[in-house]
Image 1: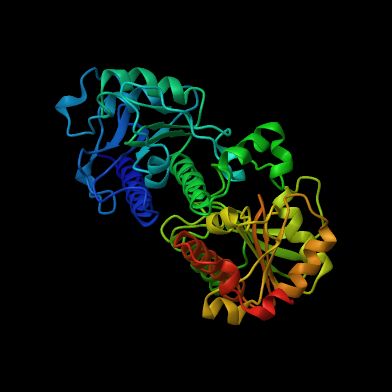
Image 2 (image 1 turned 30 degrees about the vertical axis):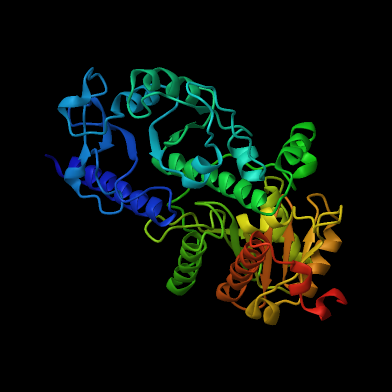
Amino acid sequence: MSEKHWKANQDLIHLFQSVGRASLLYDIQDSHSGNMVMRWKDEKGEERMAITATGSQKGDLEPEHICFPSLKQKDFGYYKASSESDIHAKILGLVGVNASMHCHTKDLIIDTLDDEEKPNHPKPFYPTDPLGYYLLGGIIPVDWFALPSGSPQMVKVIPDRLSRHPVTLVQAHGVFSRGRTLKEAFFLQCVANNSGYIVRLMKKMNIDVECLRKRIKLDPHAQFSYSLDEYKIDDDETCQFPREDELVKEFYKTGARIFESRLSPFHTGTLSIRGVNTMFYAPKASMPREIGGPLLEIPLRPEKQDTKELEIHKTIYAETNFQTVCHCWVPEAEAHAHFIYPGEIQMLERIIPIDAEGSYLYLVIPVLPPKHDIDTFLQLLHDYKVVVVRGGGVWGVGTQSLSEVLHHPSSVREICLYRIGAYERGLDLRKMEPEKAHKW
């Protein structure tokens, strides 16, 4: 085997290992579930399928756990590859698809279960969050199969679904995704399960999910702050930072904590530090330790090609003295932003902590509607250092370090978890909120 070929093989193995470990950290696999697949060429130039072996531990993959059957193979049973190899081979045959992934996305699976007589045709899943709406096309097909693992029916249906949708769900089994790269396929898995988790949280708080879905269908752009760009696949190795190891280290450390603490799905959210005339910017802030993401140095001045996300960072720096900005798509905050207190008709305008640490850090956390005045947004950031935007994520600002600004979305997540848990138990949130918060 040539040195070049061996290196390529080593890179592929490392990618499978890092994505496998990240899927365990994000809790969308059990120790042995699912599979990862990539298109791969051998020394003779023949296209093969790199696929994880059946029953392999995705968090502890060894080289021998990755199989390389030919894509022309008719019967994959000879190999120790997954029993779903036929399905993945068909998925790789789709135009522009170079990778696929199957995960046991627990929250999405739970929300799409039913107890109807089989066979039946389950309803599609409709995301209620902006990530799910814009990045998954607003719908995830759901299919029931008599044999939900590697059956001929799945070989026919799943690739057809993925020819029209980025992800599709096998009821009670999990999600199949396709991507231009393995990281994109993993990204879509995380976004899909995040959408399922948000809907589950909403139902725990008696939020009318079906009414929200109707409003989204009627006027989606009124329910979300702004549309989201598709996933970029060619920028992950970019590092435009000066040769300051500490700065790079801080960005990667903060990004890893965002991912591991589930403050934002894989490669979502943004993170920045103000420089003199530039800003140091991570456009894929949620970064597992072994995977990372792009680190860019960008002019502070507005530019025509700026995304809406980048525009907000630049506006904050232009209009305030803050030195750091963090934007995360915290699922607990997105769900809670739609909460209506029993007996009331309006969604809440602020989240009041009921836990000791949350109350110490924030008397209240403001909640803005999807479409809001930029001056109001900036004023609230000045006053509270963190703002929840319904359909727009959690924005936090700091005066010193990334560690300081990271504390905001992390605290918001816990505050919302305690409130959701208390409400789920039947406790009266109004009685648990500090009296002084109501006068604030």
